[in-house]
Image 1 (cartoon, helix red, strand yellow):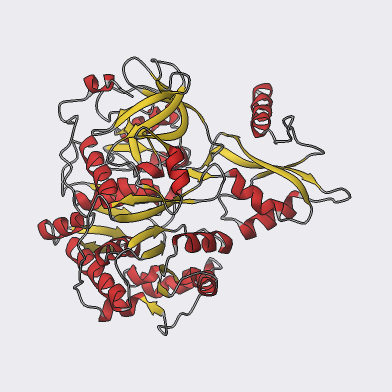
Image 2 (cartoon, rainbow, N blue to C red):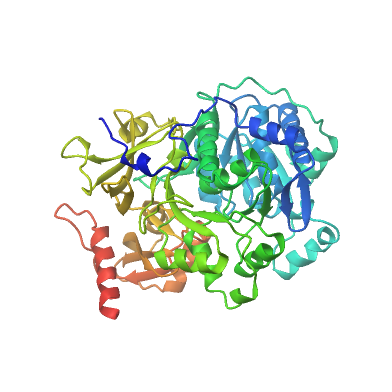
Length: 562
């Protein structure tokens, strides 16, 4: 499949068509920044600062401790943390010890956590004290052997660290007491006792995995995307080159997007460490907190998702805050509305452009140029060293300009495959091209546009949500006869999750009842926001429920309502 690259004519001279991508372990970025900028602030977290040397030393301590209690090269370690210093230290500590990071969403409920721990065969997990009751139950159900427990207050400055328990109580959060005993270890004790040295194993970057990044498939069951050191390091280098006006050691980057999401991991954490930027971390998104932080800490870079920018722009007090420090933002996770882009650029004076990627590509493959030629509604053009085309099933090859087909990608950031799923891996590749499952087209100038998803994935608030997984949970409810879940248009979240339910004969139910049930069994962002009870669901001649027909109904309702 030959492919032309018309987009290269628009590359500014500062961005090479091909980067020299050294084959190196991902943790070398931290080693280099700690060596060159030892006293520079690496992390600012709720008033507490951590230098690059301190970050590296604490990562070494954790790596040392992992190895002391038995971690071997290739062992999987789950990190179940929000954005905080411990998330960064854990990530690099695992890599320095030779382990494989398994990013784990702190919002996961027990059934979701159990599935991921079993599938990844993780033997270690690093988590918060608040989550310990949920995590500790996994020891009897999975291969989990070692639990390292930390608290948000472990990295709060005085007197915030002393006041934190009172804040927890006020917010009705359960205060969990955890002891350092057996195979449960306290973070603070590790940092007090472990040595700042580790037996760093030999890494073969193009073969050895750095990460299992869980995603969902067309079946709805999460798959572990195998990303090598070279995959992630390459994508980080590409990201750095795309932001060519940003200077090493001089920028500061706002870390709101969760690091357990591959987009936050690459465009904030790994980029920040590679370029020795100051990372300003917020453990959760709150529009007021974010605005205050931007005004006070003056970040120059702000990767985000459309819902984040929308929430800030719609904040009643936005005019009271000075956001002019922001130079550039790449928006990911969902389509970026043009009015959001224009308004955000007016408010900040910086640049906001849309990008595109997937967990399987570390994640970024395309973006609009930040300071150069860009197109409204487009995901932009492929990054350096990245080739992309629209695959036509009819032609069994590249589609013509403006012809719809499936977006296909090849490049050094493309995954090694799905963990323990060789058949699914094989089905995703064709002649060396990774088939994304997204339907789109490329115009004559090489700019790409996404028009639909081949899969039925829902993107709500920047999260990827897979209907089948939710359906599995709802089907377990005693009153459910049939159910289908779909993403319906939502002006704020992009899409929202709606469940269409046919109850068993003779039963009655309420939205409140199902809402309570779903939230007990699913992370809050996956739980349906809307329920509709029906006598029957639209089906094909062979009995397959027509999810797409329901989505079209919702779109028609919206049109009529306007």
